[in-house]
Image (cartoon, rainbow, N blue to C red; front, side):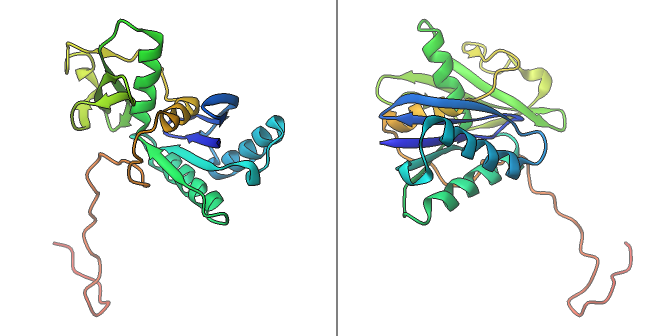
Length: 210
C-alpha cells in the first residue's frame, strides 16, 4: 500500500510518502505563509521525485493537532479532497501521538513521554503518552491547555519533548501502518470558542451599546 502523509500542525510542516510502511520520500514544507499553495506545490514535487502520481496513492494520513488550526484545517481538507475522486481512505491521528512515537523510537528506555507545543496566548498544549507494543503509542489522559511556565511541572514522572521538536509526517504514516483506528477527521482545537456580542437584533437593527 502506498500512502501520502501530511503533518501541518506547526510552521515546520512536512509531507511523506510511505510504501508498505517504509518511507519512500519526505520533505519539509515552510508553512508559515500561504499554507494552501505551499502544501499543493510541495505534494506535487514530492510525488514527482518519487516517480508517483496521485493515482498511485492508495490512502492518505494526516496529523490533526493540536497546533495551528489553519495548517491543520488546510491539510485535513486537502487529504479529503485528494481522496474523494477514487473514494480512498483518509486516516487521522493526533500530531502529539506522532511526536511521541518518534521519541519512543529514539529513546527505548522511556516508558512515558509528554508531547507539547505552543498554543499561543501564553499557553502550551500537552498530552501524555505511554509506549504500546501494538500501536506504538497510547495516550494516557486528556489533552491539557497549560500556562507556558508549567512545562515540565505537569506530569513530572514523564519525559517532556525537547523545545523545538515538531511532529513529522513520516511518523504520522508509521502510525497508520501500525494499524490503529482513525481519529475524527477534523482538527483538535483546545482554546475555548471566542464569542462576540451581537451587533444587530433579529430584525437587523443595530443594538445599543450596553
